Each structure stands twice: as C-alpha cells, then as structure tokens.
Amino acid sequence: MTASHTQPNWRKTKLGDYFRIKHGYAFKGEFFSDEGPYVLLTPGNFQVDGGIKLKGEREKYYTGDFPKEFLLKRGDFLIVMTDLTQNAPILGSPALIKEDDKFLHNQRLGKIVELNESEMDRMFLYYLFNTTSVRAQIKASATGATVRHTAPDRIYAVKVEVPSLSIQRRIASILSAYDDLIENNTRRIKILEEMARLIYREWFVEFRAPGVKLRKAAPEEQKVMGKDVFPVGWEVKRVGDAIETLGGSTPSTKNPEYWDNGDITWFTPSDLTANKAMFIRDSSKKITRLGLEKSSSRLFPPYSVMMTSRATIGVTAINTTEACTNQGFITCIPNDRLSAYHIYFWIEQNLDQIVNVASGATYKEINRTEFRDFLIAVPDEATASQFVEVVGPMGRQIEILQAKNANLRQTRDLLLPKLVSGEVEVEKLSIG
Image (cartoon, rainbow, N blue to C red; front, top):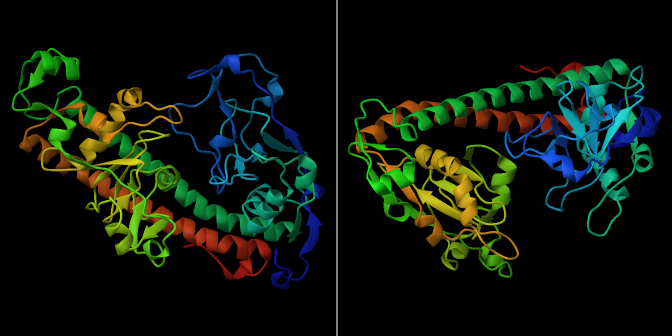
C-alpha cells in the first residue's frame, strides 16, 4: 500500500498478526462424483476478484467419508493457495462461505482460523485480499515451476496498513453495498435466464408453443426430436442449411500494424469464460482494420451467437456490438426463423452431443463442418417471431442488468484501493 496516502493512526503491520491458516483436506479421487451431498471446492471455483463461482452443472461432488472439520459453515473464510494458470491469477483470491454444511475444501485452499475480530473486521480482511498490494506480495511469495503455490507463513509475512476497527467496518460496508447490488442483479439475471430457458424448452422441445398443431413425425423428425409427433409447418434442417456459420482467425502477432491502436472487437475464448454471461459487449484485445483484412476472420453483426469450439467447447455468448473472433469459435448468424435466443438455448440443450462429436489428440475440437451437419427443428415464421416477442424483453432486461453490474464492479474496483489504503476518507463517501 502507498504509505503517503495513509491517514493518521493507520498501523503498519502484517497479516500474520491477525489469524492462522489451515489447509484443506486431500480428498480421495475415487469418491469424486457428478452429484452428491457435498460440493468440493477447488481453486477452479474461485473468481479472480473474490468469491466462489458455481456453474450449476459439472460441479465436483464428494461421496466418501472425510473429517467433519472440513465441512464448511456459513461465514468461513477461504483463500486460494495454488494458482491455476498465468491467465487465471487467482492466488490469494478470497471467498466467504454463504451456506452451512454444503461445501468442502481441498488442500489447495486455506481456511482462515483464529481470526482476531477485536482488531480485524472479517469483511475488511476480505477486501484487503482483493487489493493489488496484497495480491502482488502473495504472488511474489509463490514457488513452483509449473504450478505456483504459496504457504501460510508467506501469507503471514504480507505487509499491510490497517485503520481502527470502526473505520474498517465503514470501509467494508461501503464496498459490501456494491457487492450486494451486484449479487442481487445476478440473481435477477439467473431468474430471467431460467424463465427464457423454460419457454424455449416448452415451445421447441415439448412442442407446446401457442397455436402449434401436431402431426405424426417422419422418421428423420423422430430421430432429431425423439418424439412421435412433430409440429405442422416446421422443418428439420441441417444447421448449415438453416443458418450462416462463421469461423475466425488470429492476425499475425508479429506485425504491430495489425494490433496497435486497434478498435475492432476481437473475441478469444478466454473473453467468454471470464464473462460468464449470456451477453458480452467488449473484448480484452482489439485488432486494426488492416489486421482484419489480412486475416480470414470476418465481422459479424450484433446479436450473433458465439460458441467456443476447442479445448473448452460450448461456452456461448451473444455479442452486443459488431465483432469478429479468433479461430477458437463457431459463430452463428440468426435469421427470421432461428433467433439468437433460439440458437443460444439450442446449443445449451444439445451441448453433450456437440462435445461428443469433438476430437483431437492435444485438445478436443469440433470443426465447422461437423457442427453444420447437426440437425435442428426450424419453426414456422409466426412461431419464431412470437418467441422473440415473448423472450426478447427478458433478454433486454438481462443485458441492462449485466451493464449495471459492469458499472458497479468498475466503481467498486476504483474505490477499493483508495479506501483500503486510506487515500480516500470514508466519512466523505456513501453509496447511492
């Protein structure tokens, strides 16, 4: 932290003055499962800016016996002791458990114990771990050639500057207010997504769309949908015949003219995995017009559907601005019969089949030819239009809430280092 900004009476100290760290348990792989009574937390469940991320599926569950001291309670404080990759710098990332008797933590996570709460507020400590200064010190303490890890003694040695307990609580309350708003918006987004998902399944999987009349299904229709009936006026088509699909590419990284001062949105799979949302507005890297011209990547319009096609297959998002991608994508261009929402949920519904088609020795990949050969039930124009009328407002609300969360995170991230270093006096701030 920057000492010149520190307010009077802030104390220079070390993290080890306030708590101890206890490693998690080495759970046995033979008892890992796709479902079970307990979710086993690992570094992969932590977000870079703090907190736990659960995908809602494909979690790692544990079904074996274990010492009950490793069953977490509400309020338990965890930190990541082992990094994932250079692209996911989560070493030192904190999380506070919000449910009793649901989560376990493995040996690559540390649990803060014996916290001296008469001198250190739990939430203030959480935000301390999210500061650049603390993270940088933890990162510098890490060892290991392939996987970087730290140890309790190294975290104890991290230098910090700490105000009185009352100031700690005031700082924590301001920052928590932003996180509470973000969490509330996130819950609303999940509800809206689930509503749209259920409508998709009701209309296009169960064939209960308004006004739909059913007839006996032809053999190919039975094969695609697994039902003896099929809607009148609908068709079964190859994906490649139903919609336009695009690939992407990467301009030469050796030519700065393709990258310097670029203003064209160019997505990579890591943009989508970091975004973790239905809509995505911006990319971490941009290319120039020349870079676009000198590559095989093509611009596609807003509200197309991007799907990652290699390594992690099937991460999907709808772009809200004109964009292009690298070679790790298949992008679907919607039309009057298949909207962006329809395609987005169709990919989700058929993800297992898409992944099963993928192949590759180094990493799994599905190519565009294979993807285009999938069969899809295409509704009549009236049903397709009505679906957009019903689901579209939900999508727009999701997009608005995502934008609000982005603004809240930006404001919180600007305030955090200034508040926790004493550069900004908390008495002069409030959240509106």
